[in-house]
Amino acid sequence: MAQSDYNEENLSSLSSSIIANLHSYFGDIPVMTSGEELSAEFPTLETDGAQDSGALDEGDDSLNQHEDNSSTIDISSALRSLALKGTWNLAKLLSVPKLLSVLRVDDEDQDTIAAGEGEPVEEEEVFQSKYIHFFPLYQDYCLQAVRNDLHSLDRTFLSELIAPQYLQGLQFLLGPSSQSEATSPQSHPAEVKPSSPSAHPIRVTPCTLWQDLDEVKASGLLSSLTNREIRLQESMFELIGSEASYLRSLGVAVNHFQASKALKQTLSPMEHHFLFSNIRRVMAASEKFLMDLEMRLGESVFVSQVGDIVLRHSSEFHDLYVPYVTNIMYQKDLVNKLQQQNRDFVFSLKKLESDPVCHRQDLKSFLVLPFQRITRVKLLLQSVLKLTEPDSESVSNLIEAIAAIHEIVTDCNEGVKKMKQIEELVCLETLLDFDKVKAVPLVVRGRFLVHQGPMRQLTVKGTYNPRTSFISVYFHLFNDLLIISSKRDQRFIVLDHTEFPAHVHVEHLKTEVLNLPSDSFLLHLSQSQVGHPTAMIFVTNTRSDKEAWIKLLSRDGNMTI
Image (cartoon, rainbow, N blue to C red; front, top):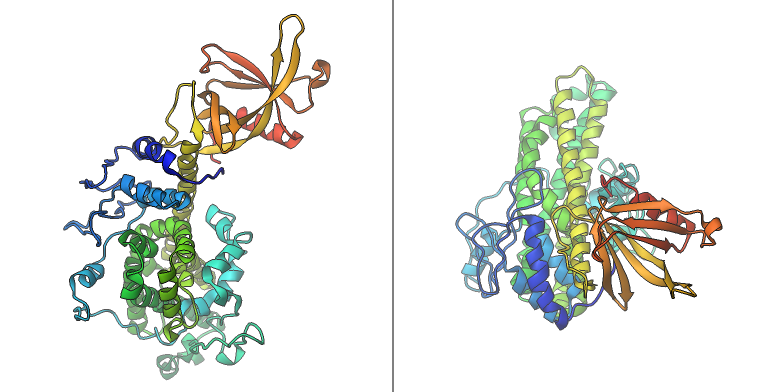
């Protein structure tokens, strides 16, 4: 995807053209000018469930929360503010994803803002897990298992983000500590080894097995259960134990990093709000989920099933995890930008990360937790299903639970893909110059870039003594539009465009007979901006390019790329 720096010349185009075109992409979005407030939430692209939008009042140092918890954002002024700082790449990343996020101002944030410095804030009594201190931080608990599982995931869009080619990026997100070996839930402390002779060994709280629980030993069950039944109990307890570990790490993310006044003072309200996304609500959902799991274990040490509990919480998981995972790449970009440009942030962050509560894990490793967890839950449930007797009453719930979690992962895939598509459209909107050709809005609902690339167009000059030559052109093929341009520096001067596939037809040429380059093909535009049907000969750089373009231009428009 083409990139360019955002400068003052682009500001009016961005605010008047791109933002206006977002209306057509997302529907009726009430975008206001600076200082005005939106009266309704942005619609989302999610297919299931109503989502809340991000909020920002540019005229205040704090984020405003409405009584109905709906939120507003001044996109135009937010983009302009970031653009003036010379951070175009981040500007386009921060602006559009807000439309998909469920970011809201949490009650705890309001309490922090309302309370004076040093003034105690009354906190609600929260659920205290019985097992949360039995397990290490989630990063240490399951990192090695996650690494192994990533390679066995289906090749969906989300898995491609993290394995195998994106594994390096995942390790970058997790921080330096990701290079160390973590204990498996069923490993004993003596088996833990430092990652290298020079590294400090990770201090890991002993992981507990179901059969190691005092209640299980006292019950005498172990002598009467088969090996398969014990393995099934261990598998279900792993869901409980890993959730406790996950909640413990989320607690550090929320109570140590997000709640830090020192860190918050180094950020703008929008940056702070965007950095932590809806992780506080993710933590609240994890608390409720773990509470139900522990209550089930408390009813009987021989756990009957866990699929029904997952099903009960799956709807809320969907509402929270899809926006969080959708935004995680942009969250990472924000962290990188702050680390490069905000010294106060770097100083404050290093101080927080050096605290023993972090166990040498950095902020990025905490921010990526929901990303790891939702894929892990599906794998854990699949392990439980494999050990469950086929005629068991719990099988149906397990199958439904796995399907529900799979739907969440699938919608995360779609969310990430849509955000990348919108990012491409927003970027191209600033690079296309329609000049003498009728302009068309680029950011339109349902539109996405299919393929782009350079090629040469055959031209004939002269009447009595015609001479052929080639000019360089550039194709942008969308699922519903073809744009032919001349690339100049980082911009594209549009020469022609037409609807695709209705007015596009491509033909092979007998290149040897016509004495043309072997990678030539004929392109017909039955309707174009020059006012009449046209036929043009184009030459690609390679044979593979020619085959790819002919295949794409010959399609019937049912593109899912």
